[in-house]
Length: 121
Length: 175
Image 1 (tube, chains in turn brown, cyan):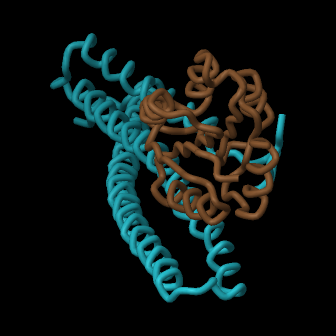
Image 2 (cartoon, chains in turn purple, green):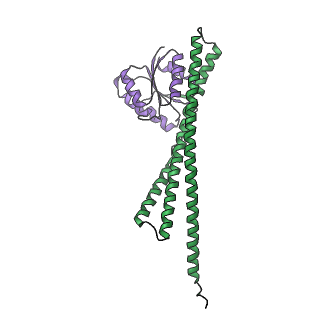
């Protein structure tokens, strides 16, 4: 419990809802507006979990996953891609980039809390 | 004295030219109407986006206010209220999904607007050329190229739609 989570999404609604759900489960949350912002915040903090959108300006989610996996401190950190895209091809791309899982928007808060517990154990 | 009658070939040529002019006018009219409607659709989409954005911001503020109110009221949140607030977090995500659909639609409308504009330009140039007041052939070829490029961009819009075919909303797949 009480993990430090980075949420990356260009939508304020998604960021606020993620923060609400994660905080209600006892986690601490830092928000980023796009992949570039997320990468900078990841370098400045030691996150236990990263949840990122795929389609974003400046840097997309899969590029962010690749950039994070190239950093020694984020080699094994769980990274979840949260996206409206659910095609197998796109999912395979996420898997190859090093993502831990794929979540389809709109996320179910109960399932999200369960999966966060599972991947941060 | 009666004027000499036109031969069958000449009659056919005159007929074909008239038909070509009619078709040109029709295409010109259609592209102008299309362009007008595309511009109107673009403005309506922008207005929809603003309305969605304002409504979302207000809803999020109300949601946070309700949460703060419950927290400051002390004690533990009543179970049904806490459950409702948690369930609302899923419904509140609609604005992101609608926003993405609007963005895709805006891209399509913009591509359609460019095609209609190029089509209008092309018809005007062809019409001017036929009337002997046309631009040099190189300019007409340039206009044709620009039209084909705009058309190709419109055709490529087909593959950029938001897809949710393989998984359902809310589903989670751990690798």
